[in-house]
Image (cartoon, rainbow over all chains, first blue to last red; front, side, top):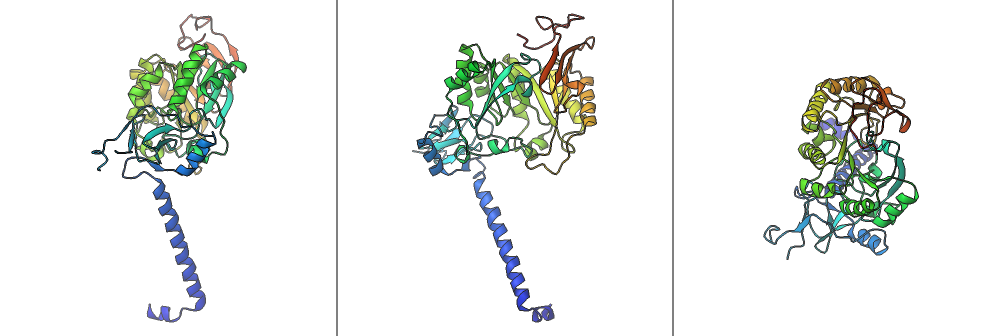
Length: 79
Length: 327
């Protein structure tokens, strides 16, 4: 092992850097996908609220109130 | 005062903080109120033959104004409409402005007898379906609901008041399949099927047969047996061929022989009307009398080429009453 490290050349370090950078980018991408998923097991998703509001203001989406929901009390929300 | 809301529409029961959306992506909490953001804002409007839904025992050859918005409360790996269903409204390039009255007017102008709520799952644009459905009924139009059935019972029963027919997917008779392939659960779908039946909505069931995932003949037999027991042997079942799609491109299309064997299993279990779907020209896309085998309705693709049913939906040779809504 030690002899292997002693014989590393600059091109090997460049390869190692490239390899580690790829691992980092893959990890960051996977992490960002997970942030889009449900939070705390309750199934909701993050959305680009600013984009939603813009499109509502432009008439492309609606502010129509949904049926079949209720507001959570402060007790349920852990406040 | 909490700004969180809890959605009661489907079994996911999303608890949504202010500025968030339900799992379906399109029911958004704005200022502590849940907004159905795609109400009146479809991203798909087409005119389809009713056979495409597929509905084979409901007003044959009728034209259906078919409409769908972004979003869905399932996440099927093989979704054929994923570019619509797996996106929020704010992500869509094309959004039409069509209030309920506009849809009804367009359906009349185009000579359609039905409005079909489809493409994504109309459960997520529930309010739009309900309001359009009420107006459509007043104008003598039918309401057709094409769904995966993942909805709570109370909202479904309310919606059934305006529905005339449904094609509901029964994706597999297996909890693990629903968990792994659709990110859902089986029991609410079975409950929805029973609710449609109890509430008098004409029901046809589709099972998309996917090689290696849900093509087990024993499971198909159990599914058919459940249908006979809970829905009745006269409930049409469509066994549809899978095509590689979205995140299931690694699997082959369903062999025709698999569909034919599945059909035999389902009919041996007692179902009278079992169709093979998505195989153009297959004889099992046509309707036959379960008593004497008479060809009643011949279909090539989605086109009805022959209809021999007598008025009232009876077989021309033995007068057996064929279940369906024929007028």
